[in-house]
Amino acid sequence: MNETPPPSLALSPAALPDAPLADALRLVALDGAPVLLASSTHSAAPPHRTDIWALPLAGRGPSGAVATIPQLLPALPRWDAAAADGGALSFVVEVAGGAVNALVRLDGASGVRTSLTAHRPFASFSGPRFVRGAGAGSLPAPSPGAPGAVSAVVDNATAVVLEAAAAGGSVDHPIGECIDVVVLAGSPGPTAVCKRVAPGASRGGALPGTVSVSARDAAYGAAGAEDAPFGDRRVFEIDADRAGGGLVIVATSAAHLLVAHRPAPGAAFRVLPVDAGGADPATFSAPCVLVTDRTVTLAVLSKARTPDARALVATWPLDPRP
Image (tube, rainbow, N blue to C red; front, side):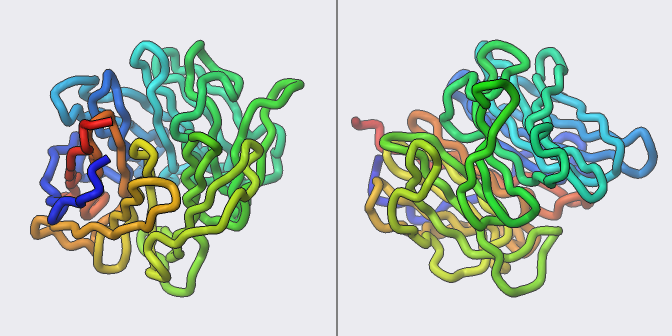
């Protein structure tokens, strides 16, 4: 990977379908090309639902509606997406149940829903994400080739990774105290990017916190010292992806979109400058990042669920040399 960061990451707008109701973004790679996914929740009156739309950023991939998630309650669900075999999409979704939230996986091609948290019916799960780079089949799959393990936060306090249990269903591996987490598979073991709660007011429903990065062993136990890519700066929402042997983390803060880059394990993180293109970073939410073979793509939502809602996207190239 090129260890010389770009002078500035310049954000530029990308048109969103159903923009006034847009509330969340994700980036997925389909056929090697980045595709931006956006959700909009229709909650004014029953029946409630969340629609997920696709916007290909490199001219390849699906466009338009790719999933509809029916809901009993009008809450905005947190969700994640990953590509399954054959280019289909698989989703993991937080299902609001009042005091207790469950997680389900939704197969985008068939619409089949699979419960991931039936083994703990009295625990509340939130913030689900597919483990980036995890092998297919580590959780019972609604269809062959569906993505594997899922991370989440239990009872707003502890991060876990859900994997298949030997006797069927799923089992969770604790990671530690977190209120948001991204887990990335890799060698010699996974990496966990964790947000821990910090003092301060919430923004858009997200509590402030600080970010730590730690290596994990095969059972997701701690396997080394923690690193703090943004120091003690308070952030609201996070995302991360592997970049070769390195790592890219994106986070929203009170006044900036923060991007940290570590070119290799053990190297120091560098926080990269971001040109917001005239947008106000105080309105940013739902940051996401995707690393493909030669490009880092990041996106953020500005002024969610307003008539001025829009996605802002930036890219920079990786070093093409081995």
